[in-house]
Length: 464
Image (tube, rainbow, N blue to C red; front, top):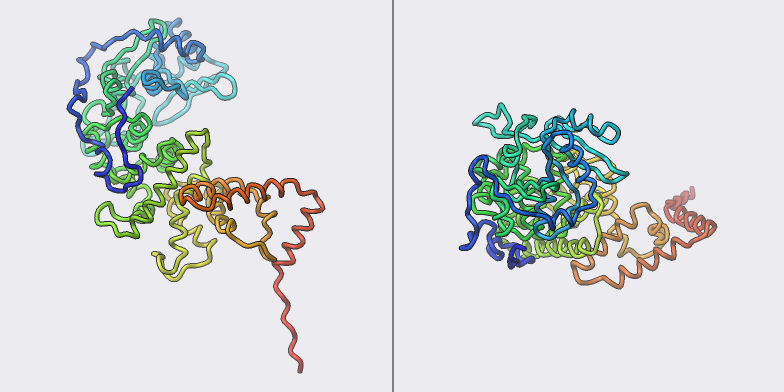
């Protein structure tokens, strides 16, 4: 297992934690192995640990029909560090149509930029099966961004064109051996994350690798190698050229990772947060020379992510709407305050402010209206938890609203982050349980009272 690194989760100063690119004296520095000479290690225990996985059946069938096939990427890496892989990917010499013919009933070809085959077992298990790739053709020296990646190659070429050394390992279940052309085994053993090849080339090829590097480093506790970190900092602006839906998907993965606190701090340190979520980055204040108010806002946000991580470790997975609401709630509160508002004019109604803060992300990332609208309502409803019952507010009806469970999730995280309001949260839990037990007549009576409370009083006619 990689060594643990000290980290001050509450500090917004990048020098307060171990620097992402600081070299260790004992860190491995072995370059990728010479062409055609993989390092081979026995892996019987790893294969025994996954003996029932459908991916092994896929590999067996491909090999029986004369094709090379291996487990590859994250599943091999996770097995080596003692984690249970969430999914299993297969790399093979067979082309997509050849794979499709071997699995005619449970497979289909997907992708345009990167064509591969999804092989389905049951309702939930999908084995992603990709053909060995070589370096893509037609990449200009002045523009390294890869827009198409369907140039097929050998197993070695495929390993060398992957992103990070720890993701370039191949596991052959039939021979129970790991093949390593890129020095990935040394880096797994040393807890080091680095690109395969020159990071000044590999990061601009696919800037989303910046987010992936942060995800792997924080999830696995790995240190990011100096040159790789520098390339991430130098090319963070290139994220603007990546497909917005793909970028949003990686952001949501970081939120749900259980290491969101460390991940977002690294996003901020390398400049990626200012590109992806500029309003949030500005809200947190400058990295250097921050005021007391900046530190207070940043501290509140980091504590919110810390509370989220705690629940993710217990099995909680926030929906897309809750994740977006969590990232934007504090900004909405700031914009609704006349003394701290940064937008033009005085603060509009709370509902309008909630929409304002989500609008930039909604347009840039092409979010669905459903997720955007739901996130806006979750933020809007946070004030209901401290609202007094009366003619215009019926707590029982609020508890029965469609977004109430997700709104309550965010309120719980906010209470834990602030260290206050827990009794209020528990009271709402009890109130929601009581509301769910209301009979039809009681519920209808509540609705009638709410309608009467919303009616405007009639103006009295003046006497002549």
